[in-house]
Image 1 (cartoon, rainbow, N blue to C red):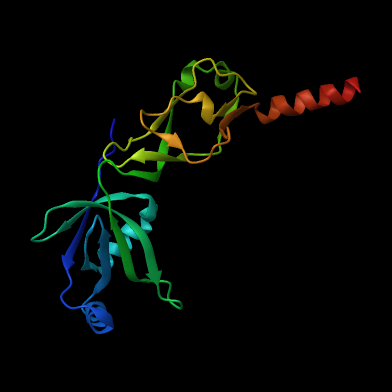
Image 2 (image 1 turned 90 degrees about the horizontal axis):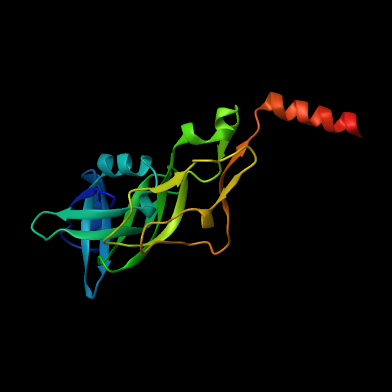
Length: 203
């Protein structure tokens, strides 16, 4: 299932340079620029409160947006930088790059764990530790997966789930080449203590 691409609202900024940027900030906007795709850079303004809300939602730099600018066709963009005030740490300028649907980009994709009721280790009281609730994948911009599915059927206490154990969406690949751990099933604390005591007694 492809991920829904969120809209990002903006308006064209008239004028360029520091004067126009300062004027935009006075009017409650954060100036930005859209570049790439062999087109002329387009100066834009984003509503300050609207942008701040988006930034607080997290993963702003890893999200593909459908940029909506009045009077222009919609286009897919990804943020390539947010400049901030050195004192207040609030956004003062944003850079966006145009992206084709055929472009390959790196994004963090949510991991969905299913069939917990079919994992013997969890039925025995084991606990699942998730090391990576999201995994960074290289994906096609026009076919971004909504999530990655991990099937816990048959998983026992002590099992470790690595990235190579997971069937990734078609056209996606991890940005890290090594076979890193995503989650594991650990023994419940009481069982772990009793096993430790048995080992000490045997010693």
